[in-house]
Image 1 (cartoon, rainbow, N blue to C red):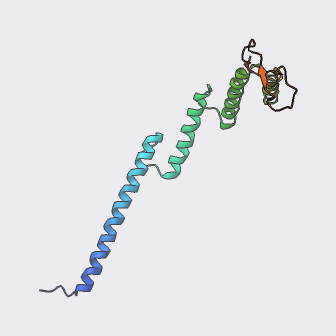
Image 2 (tube, helix red, strand yellow; image 1 turned 180 degrees about the vertical axis):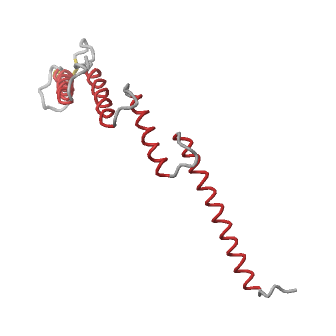
Length: 153
């Protein structure tokens, strides 16, 4: 009882069904990943990728707004301004200027502190007694009575 198909036709049919089975498996995996992504961002399980992306962006914006102390309805520009203001205030406090200082003022304070630090560090050295500067064996000493310099105070 033959079905009227030869061995070659049977192999082609098997290959086609195998490819179809793998296609079905990959579609199931795709659908599962999409459903999980939808759940993570808080949208419906049947949402498409566009809806998931839109909801993800909205969820991220709401989280960022709360993180910087704003209402969830804040837009990205307001969130960015608040984050920059907060970071600038923290850096300003660290370098010892006012919390509302702009970046230029912060830079000037850092520059002044570094110049003072290096001036104190290298300006306090004295040549060793008994040798002329520049001769072999010329050494410098640091005054041991002076405490280390803290550039931030």
